[in-house]
Length: 87
Length: 87
Image (spheres, rainbow over the protein chains, first blue to last red):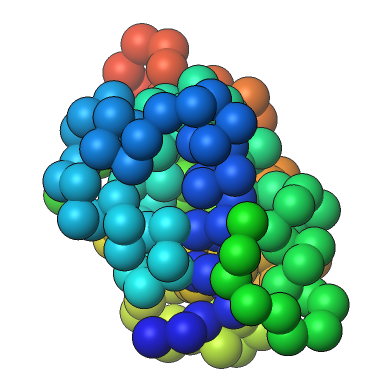
């Protein structure tokens, strides 16, 4: 599944995670989700549910609103021309 | 399922919809989802996915961030003492 919305969300999660200098596994632990699921989130392969969005926001220490903010990072890029998934 | 997060989200959707003076069916049409599904969203009975949150935000004419903002209406209430689901 290469949905632009889930991919943009994943980019945003990855950006905030790498900013904090933590691994996917570490973030998964903080969020209380499985490491492989965190990988799927970051690659935009899963259509994350509202309660899991809350878990990820808590794990990253950001507000839910900020995490899904379309005007930030990943979402902006998703609206522009198609680009590769690099962060 | 009576999850406080999905219930708070549902309250927020209902609040914004009634503010606009439109029916659940009308909003469902605008969002491109089934009317019964919109009912389940408003009652917090479904753990809505990210792409459907985008649809509802678009249907209501608000940003996704604003729709899930925990500091607004329904979410505030969800954090307080348990109350009935009235709007």
